[in-house]
Length: 411
Image 1 (cartoon, rainbow, N blue to C red):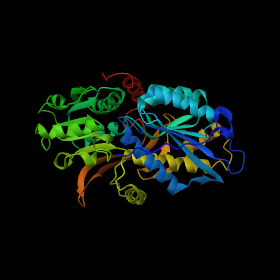
Image 2 (image 1 turned 180 degrees about the horizontal axis):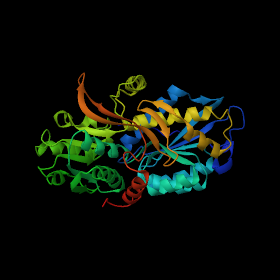
Image 3 (image 1 turned 180 degrees about the vertical axis):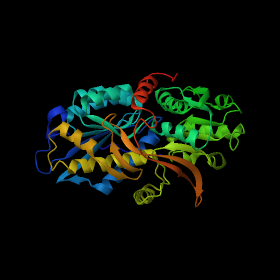
Image 4 (image 1 turned 30 degrees about the vertical axis):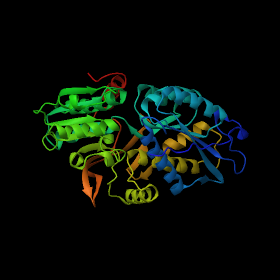
């Protein structure tokens, strides 16, 4: 996959405003947007999909606001927290109106405190860490327009227990913070309803073969819930079929398990029927999503996945928020407040930002891989509407598990 060329911009000429913000007082001066995203390394495909969605969003919603052109600088973080922090320091000192990203949760944990100190308005992809939650609640400069990392897992647990009648679940997850958060959310919600997680399988990030982990799955379990992404998703689903589990034990997972960033690489017979709890499925049947999918397919010759939708929604929220400020972008606090006050109808459905977690209240879907006109698509089979970040849990219960699981394996 081709790597996008970084956009080189001359940032020094416009000076700095409060909190490192770019000066937009002159007519026609640019609105400077810094976008940290991995364009090389292990997460490059995800980063490129998000960049593509953001670019399509600017094409759709506007590249100019009140006479001020939107200039975007994409910074390749390579998926490395140290690179993300160094780049953030440089770009903020040069001047920035809105900061987008990073994509990887470990990068966000590294960058968040610095951006808060500088009072930079930031739209992060996800809420995955205690560092983000504390910083956003205290400083108000940052939020996620994408999702809280455990949000779809919470609702998948409710669906598994109430709709499917499953009582015993095996969890398989990658052994790092995102995997802990996702698996922990599912476990907390499933057990709160009376279910039992009878087995937890942790796959290390340096594993090159997941077969030995799939072979540990008990034949007696009602279903398997999997947090796997990227190449791990491909390997896991292939091994699941190789061990005869496909069609025998239902497989459900987090968004990335069958996202369009990996779905074209999956074996057709192994992928069909796999289900996910997700905040976005490419098969959502609404005018907004049908328009988005058609435009994305035409421009990139691919179906959009969750990363594509996330980038598109970032652009939609940003442009609408900037329009509400009537050309005055001098106050970072006003920008941050405007960004978090936007309620939109996105391809994924209605999106608004919770004042508790600074992450979205939005629909969560149960999606199934189906073949539509010869293509594999993620099609919603259940919709939970306007779900708060804590899902079916009481807020205090959710926050306790979120804080614990962002730092270690769920108990």
